[in-house]
Length: 269
Image (tube, rainbow, N blue to C red; front, side, top):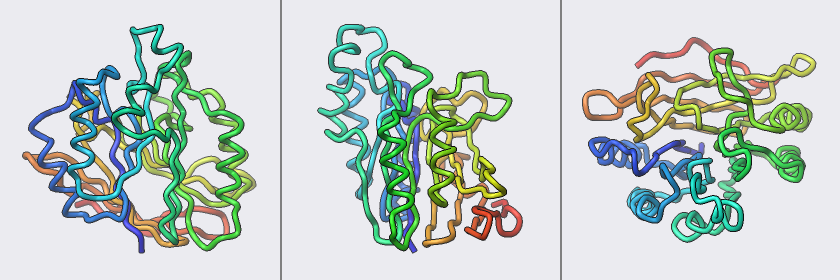
């Protein structure tokens, strides 16, 4: 079994300081093999925000992988956004924008969905669609987990535009085999199989809310713990309540003949 923790949308510069230690403590108690940060480390891509964000990630004491979000590139500095949008991200967070970590039975594949000229919406490039499709279909025993900032699917209540290229990517990856997509951006929790192709739900989506930001949009701060095997995953939602992160729900999904299926009822608390 491989344990992952997914956090997202920390938004240093708009973080809740009272949640820093509770989040660090909860992640330490989970003792994950890898922490996955699904973008928006900071609020406005400033060095003064990236510095504490990097310090926080390194203080977790666990290996971690991150991908950039739209807030991690400049919004108002148009010159920097045009010529070197990831300069500060690369200096403080990671030189790689789409890192990959192989944990044996689980491979986490990073995907950079930020686009300087589709700042809010994001974009998935055709080359990345092919690259990740090859990772999913590679002849290896194990589970592929994709880490991206922008979601590949919106529920009907979401007013934002869906990411450019999202539908084509999902159609392609559905032909490649079962996989999990981690995302953030919307500041709300959702976990479910989606994209039915010939009766098969090959994509299990998980997007977390915000781990630390005060911009909660009516949803609690949260993060996810994933206990992964080659053909099943148990996902636990951890929610900030009364000054600590507590278990709110737990659900198990298994890969069957028709892709991902929920096994049993969701367990509350």
